[in-house]
Image (cartoon, rainbow, N blue to C red):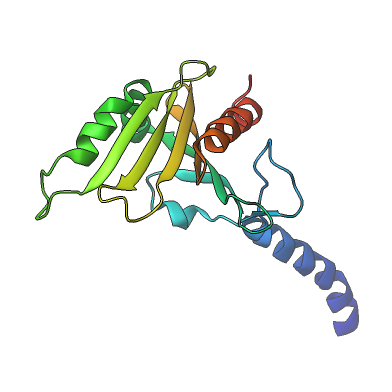
Length: 179
């Protein structure tokens, strides 16, 4: 009798464990290669701390993928979606906030520039961040978002070459958000 119960329970237990672990299986970002040198990272809701829901995250590190790139897809809701949507449409607002010394002991010594993506199907922008003294290489980013009711699906790309960041953001947005 115990053997028969075990034989019946074992497949159910295995199925339950498989379903429970689905949160650990990474989802590839649409529009990126699904094999090397790109790696998808497993995401869990707790990473977002109830502010945003990560949907997919992938990276490509040098030397296989020079320059390095990180691509993320995030879902925002409510007030966070509204604020982010406004920043996508007016990125200079973000740049002003980043430059502002309000609430800081020391002023930020970073060169910040933003530009709206006018040739993209969704609101978005590119951003360049670099130390004001030129001591380090700049970082480049791009963000594109699409509203769906109260939700905002957001594609974020960070990398070392502005043209590659911009084009990757557009390609991923076309696949993740629709064209």
